[in-house]
Length: 147
Figure 1 (cartoon, rainbow, N blue to C red):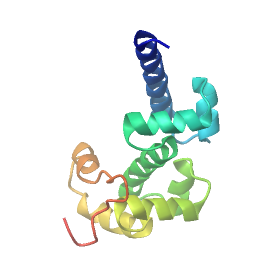
Figure 2 (figure 1 turned 30 degrees about the vertical axis):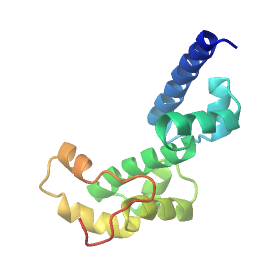
Figure 3 (figure 1 turned 45 degrees about the vertical axis):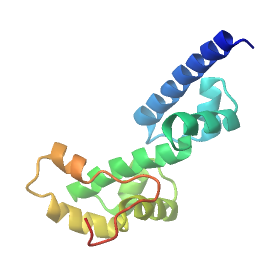
C-alpha cells in the first residue's frame, strides 16, 4: 500500500474509532463489549482494541468503564440511590467488578464516596461538582486524604 493509501486508511480508521467512542459515550449503560463494538465498526476486536488504545491512550473496555464510573459518581453524589442500584443503572452487571473499578479510578469504594461526596459537594453547582470529582484514569487515583 502506498503512503497516500495508508494515510487514507488511517483517516478511515480514526473516523471509525471516533464513532466507537461516541457510541460508548451515548450507550454506556447498555450491554456493550469489545466484540459488539468491533462488529459495529467493521473491525476485528483485536484491531479495534489496538487502534483505540493508540488513538485514545486506553483500550475500549477501560474507556467504557471510565464513562460508567463518571456517571456512577454523579448518581452517588445525588444520594438518593444505593450503590447496587447505581451499579446496575450505569450498565454494570457485577457489583464486585463495579466496586473494584470504582475504587481503582476514584481512590475510595463507592459506598465511602457516596457518603463523603454528598456532603462535600452539597452546596456546589452540579457542573462544578462534576469537574472537581472527575475520576483519574489509568489507576492514578489520589490517595485518600491527599489532594
